Image 1 (tube, one colour):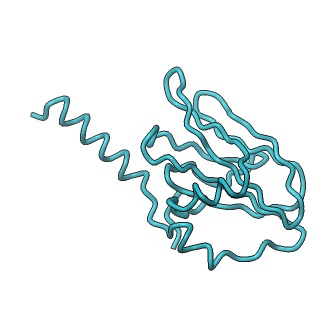
Image 2: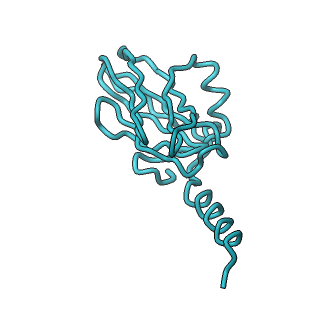
Length: 150
């Protein structure tokens, strides 16, 4: 018979293992990043924290279209036509960010874990490129379904 502490620790370890991406780190991937398609802009989404709220991994939407999963320590990007976009994540409630994307432009959206009543939630916030590039250094690439990209 397992003790409650042993069961709890096993669940914690499983939640961290399930949330780890195996894709390349940003510093390895940046040399292979494709150019932004003509008439489009690029939205980078990342979540630098690997510890706080690791089990909370809601989907990320751009104008109600799923573009990725908010895994801790991970990043992804989506190329979209120039225009107005709403970046949204939802757990107990939805957190949203409005951005205007120009052709050839890159926007950086950081997902920050905040406490909730029953479960935490991720608040998207636009950050300057310089800050985002520093914070992306330790993050790993994931695909829209949350799997590690190769």
